[in-house]
Image (cartoon, rainbow, N blue to C red; front, side, top):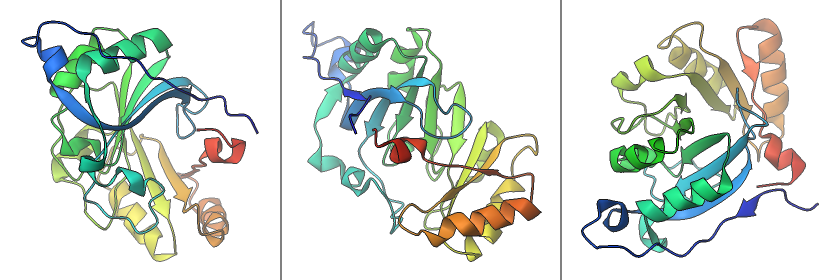
Length: 220
């Protein structure tokens, strides 16, 4: 199936080296314009900035390529901002890896100038930096969230691999505002996890099924 996502590549804009927008860089795995495939904003035009570097170490991670920052190019803030400006998405999503391993304030300060809602998906295991309109918390048992993240969460997403993960999901849900949307997402490589979640939600209707629709559609 043809992909609807488009990888965006632009040459950096050359200006004075004293300009922080052009001297401050981040290790980037990829940037692309697609549709948000998960959660509350599923189906919305989104520009994704995937940062490299992660120390959480989920064994079933589907983006292990992002774990080591040293294997990826450093990209200037000005270049990233220009990519978003040309794409003109409905939202911007900063993801990883674990994006909060980096100080995101310089990046979010620049992206805010575009007046496009700014989202982040994080495990919450590092201090929150930057300014966001929407925070998706995807907590992991392998490196647990810092206590201060829960007050800022707009959406909870917990990956379920086995029945023991439901206890983890409930313990995390108890730390956030009860009105916040809560998703249980199947572990993609474990086909049994879908049935486990289906049956669990029938008995626990405050949860929602979180599908990675982009994988079902075969798009990025």
